[in-house]
Image 1 (cartoon, one colour):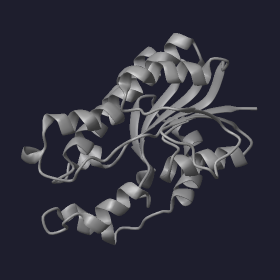
Image 2 (cartoon, rainbow, N blue to C red):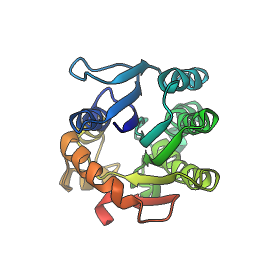
Image 3 (spheres, one colour):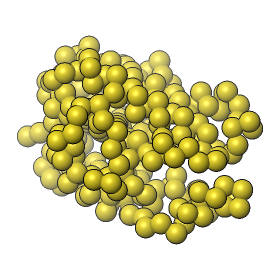
Length: 229
């Protein structure tokens, strides 16, 4: 039976991916702030990933008996508030970077320390990493940095294929917040998002499940967008 590691399975895309992999017969190992009551038959360790000092121990506890992973999906992420950069404090930026970037460094370091044989790692990135639209501040910065992090680790993990992947527009709580509460006049990208096609978390999970093997055709360390493949 193949093993899969996923972060951020409390809702949205992460939850849908975990359920899909269970249905496909994989053994799922997951870290998240909470375990949804309808998500069963997985190996789970509760972890508030904003507490960076606890991340390594949580990963070690979860994977202590695991020697191989088919894929590690670094999905956990936060949006931060959509507002102009000059109104965004360093504290707000740090909070977003902790989840979207530094947690993933700690996880990758722990994978290496545990000497786990991992075929593939996919970090869930975003088109915001390159679009840099007004108001996306810490989210754009942290996802651009995540793309760079994955490229850097690709040189240090030659036996593993790493990709940063933008999954397209998924109707998660994060996106719903943007669509319903952010001023589209001040932040024009919101208007474009409203007019763009979107997927349910389940649709996105199925698309990504089918896309992940195709990523192996590209150079390790690449940033790819599922909408352009």
